Length: 181
Image 1 (cartoon, rainbow, N blue to C red):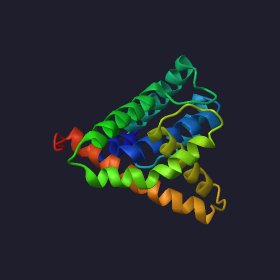
Image 2 (cartoon, rainbow, N blue to C red):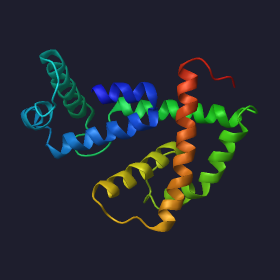
Image 3 (tube, rainbow, N blue to C red):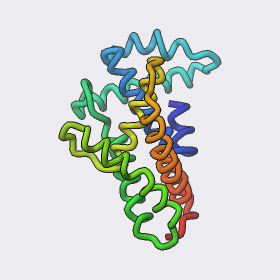
Image 4 (spheres, one colour):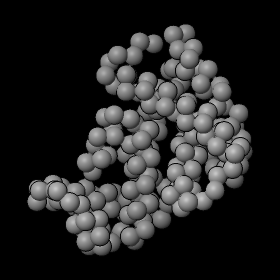
């Protein structure tokens, strides 16, 4: 909760990847709130009782949302899907803007990899931005599992990361009212 709040303000891409990881952690705990309390919430050091209660309630609300939205096995919470929608809207605005040649260049550099990933997605109908996040999350999971990542994949991720980093910075500027398109 505390990390998510900070990331949402600082870097929307990191926030979204973090939230996807939280969804998977909750699933790994089989949505068992008491296990999450004892193994995650109580494991945090340096929290006041109020902060610990707020963290517990945050996990509780996420579990409730996952149940009500039917994403207990797979998929993403609507609040996370809304971030993808917002980023996609901004992406389209940036592509149309003559003031954003560097953004457009970053996108077109990553586009061949995005197209290749979408072709490999086995019929899943997701947009370009979500495809990028799926790839970034997949790499994150491979690294957490200490699995090897091919050189070609690392090259693709370099361009996709540069593109998403640029989009995240444009998002931050847009939210601060500092982006002129």
